[in-house]
Length: 485
Image (tube, rainbow, N blue to C red; front, side):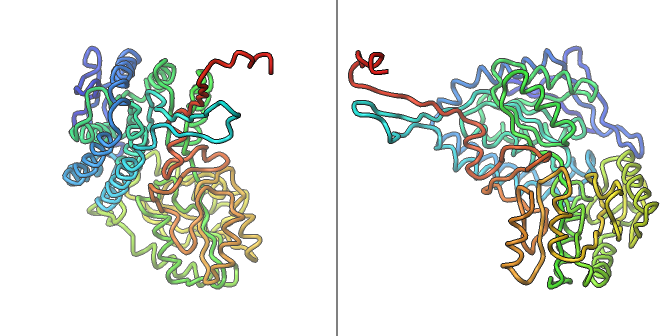
């Protein structure tokens, strides 16, 4: 069993009255983590600590901030075994998923470090005679980061890296499902040399999460909010932020389609799509939910996909699985509900569908169609639906027939045709001949429609986590300015 505490002002702290909550394995009932259950008062203390550290951190030379983030990236590598152990216990993740997380987190920290120098000022053109314009970019203040459980290292780091690099201080509100992992990630970055209060960590019991987040958003020092998670919760975060006129960045649910055209390399495509559908048991916002395949090659493609899926089956006797376990038994029940609904409405089970505890086998459902819940809902598990279409035009229509717009993929040997189709897809990222599970912190990443707004990554984060001030400058007071206006 792990023990997890909050971190406020650089010090690991317990909740008032030593309040704790139990993170339990839903399949066995075993206690995985005994974590500090912060309430509103402790959350306010964390925001106060971040506010107190802001003047010193924002005034630090950008190169010094960058160096500390690079050091944090190096330290993550040294703690890989610990992170893999925690990830396996708290969220059922396999080592390859945690390694992938750490690699993305390291790249995120290094990219953020490269942006640290964006804080500063520049001369701007267009001023009238006798006037100079300056544009001053400055840190926003305290940033609240809300991180999910499914990519516990990468998304916790993404919630804090760019804000820190750009001179903000941060409160990270961790997931109730992986408090030890998020505490460990936070402590690793602090151990890199972050001054006291620059990065703080808050954990709470599930029943207190709403109140804790509301208090943090309302705190007067908090000027930015970033959230990664479900669209349902994201709407609540956005509404609360709007009440307090706080700007937020949201990366929410997805319903990624992979379009398979008749001229695609079916063997390579089946491998890529299986990866996109089943990596981390399909519990990724970018996971492939629907495979939209031209009817002319559908039978041949489904045969290949079945073979790839069956290579990824876990052993129900040992519990070992190439891509780990789903998060809990409630998730298994929800997934079976989607499968049963589809089969009851005419879909065909190609492979999978079984489970042993939280080990669920990779599942392929063919002949998915409009009117089935699996066609519409985000799956978030090791289940993928195949939708057969007549041609590329219908494929685009199906890919866009969702409220979400996070990622998509197009598979074709004709790159010109693939690009034309990709430009028609309503998604923040489209990959040609590549898996939908693709991340590069140097590129702007986020969604359209109900998948959120704003962009992590690239240089887009500079605008997300800074303020820009316009300054005018005259050598002498303009006595006649009001007369001229």
